[in-house]
Length: 424
Image (cartoon, rainbow, N blue to C red):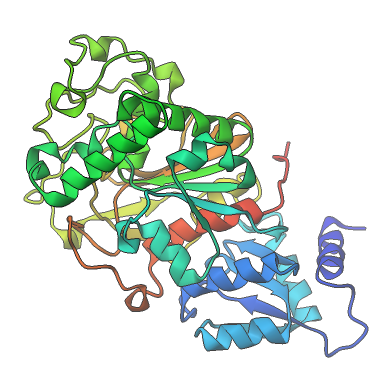
């Protein structure tokens, strides 16, 4: 029996048995340019799998399409949410699988087995539009729980498979907003709330609390969890790990002097993604370290700011392939407190998923820690080029086919994929 035939038979069994009738059908959710709502499509397949149905992620086939069992429920919901679906026969589904599994094509069929339990690490009272991932989850209608420091330190991460880090400052410097916003009521209230929480949980400083939170999240990943972070949560996570045991905060942030030799004492063996960086110790500079690129809007215009996804082997490297599934390979750039990463600060063990050509900047990276994984996506909001404090929310009804938001949703779905051993 050939490998192709085995895959065809397995697919038929997974989706409910080999059809006895020529009328048996499957649903194809195309993810190429024909899809009317890419973002809602992720929610459709996520919740379909979560209900106990089965399906496949067809990597590099029509933009990373989904193939699943045909039920009245999925067809009805797709129509209500303006998601394009194609009802096809068993033989047509088998033909697609055969095409995807040809050894000479860069495509693969990955079984979707069980939807992950999703948590978002976010402070109480955070506005939904403060975080692109929360926007994406809400718009796609993917269920999730909100947790914060108290829950993390009490062991709540054991209940989840996938964790997103809200745009947090894990160094305990309150986002380094002190220089600009220290007299603003919202900033004063935020600092007071974090200090009160730290004291309630038994810490003298917010930075000490955040370091223990980082340790718990690190253990979550090491033990098999999936972590995704954007913007300042990416570099400040590693900064907290590198500076463990060293006072890396200037006086306005924690009330006592910074260690003058902090950059000589950083331990890069502790970090997930970055090395050979320096912490920016000046409290008047709105930047945590030299990991992030310098933002100069006079040097490049929005219309020319793009980053490009790398292409991976779907059969040999299914995880980075899943994370880069899209209907385009060149995406518009967008700013944040961490806009992009300096290429020379990224560890060699980390997989670069996307970069800005010719500028030595990487936008999107992925790596393994213990039995789990992390993915860092630089920038604040893929559809808000220069997001600023107080800006209005992004309405995803206006960006239903956003390739930048698709990358976020790829990360939410990929833990549902069958865990395949790498081919040898």
